[in-house]
Length: 376
Image (cartoon, rainbow, N blue to C red; front, top):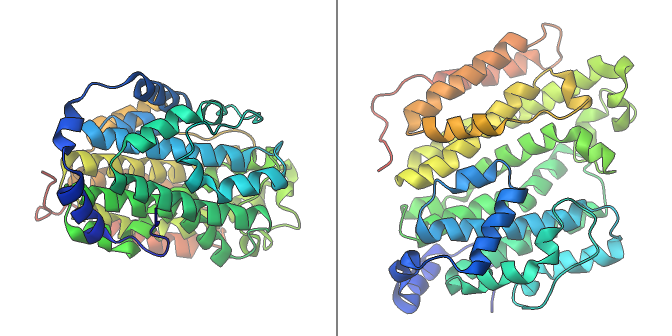
């Protein structure tokens, strides 16, 4: 199978689905197989925030994104498991798009909590192969892009902000680009959603950077570092020193600069969401955006980032799923988080002016707009 390595071709995939595959409506009506039920079990076990968001999707689309998540989770588990040698994990990651087509492949030597997605990978790959070929190609392409980023930065540090952007682009913006193509291929969104790579990339960068910012301590404990040296070296000699109480002031200044960097994508994310017309697709994407900005608000100038875990509670995610119905709701909730960050900006913070400027832009975009089209 020829994978779409350099860029997706939505029109080709659309034709493949509509004219060659057929029978999609029937698939949506079929009851879940035992193997697919197992996949949802793994989704609930490993995707604490993602699982309830996935439930906003309908029918086959929900199944597609369940499998996409588990494929990405399996790759993340390989990347993050520091008990696996580079000699073992690099070939696995490079070949992951092919392993999807090997019914018996599994990996039994992981020590990570999420290792079940590797130990029982045959169940996941079986459901992957049950998807229409067009969706398989999109997911396999995403796996290729993710592997490129993971392998490159397993063997070198994230030195510059450009490195940070590149890593996040490979490991997650590739996912949001793939998601957007699937929305179009499924006939749920207009061609622009699948074809406009800039907005879907900004969406992915925003989500991934918020996770990297939040997961500082977890990554340090695992012997990993994804904060760009170009930024953190302005505030300390070693990144691990940020966990020491005596270094909390420069640590927070570094944290605040990275959060400010991530906030730059919010205007593009607003544009991306405003293009979506299907209600379940809109909710699926908008709730992810809200979780990310809520995470940034919780982390901003918060020393807990260097001492423990700062995470959005499951109940808060479920509330967002209920409350996010249209762009007006997105704007209203965004304004709340913008004001929360505003109140926490230290006057002496080196990034304070830049933070205030981007928040002012977001605040303006978050004002009520009665002319906005609502998802259907």
